[in-house]
Length: 157
Image 1: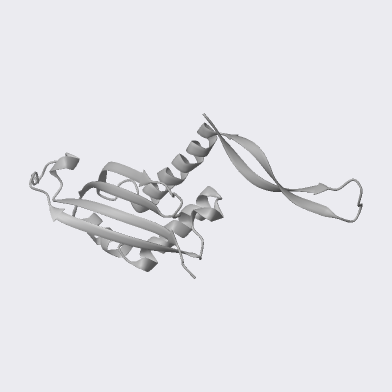
Image 2: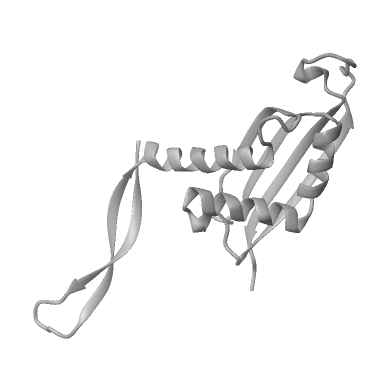
């Protein structure tokens, strides 16, 4: 599927040499290219939030992309051990999540991933895992489960 992308272009008027007109021009961007960029950003976000060997096991990552309201929401669920619960506490602050989003923007080369004109709200809920099995190496046997919701929205003037 192909999605149109509207950009502005300068078009010189042939009868008046000193004037230019800004007119919308439609460029075609393959849908899979747009999806690939979003997947790369989400994969980078997941790697920065939950580095390999940090004690997390992610069971789902759902993204509700920005709509007309420009609000994007990520919901991440999984299992965590004692060490990773401390990391969740650090991320569960405005400064913690802002730092992660700034890193994603820098490492993906997409400054639009996080702009200073946006706010981030993070909410982490942790629960004891009823399937916890001491000594087990299975992720589902970790001592805790968690759900993290991150909401990104533009600042209203």
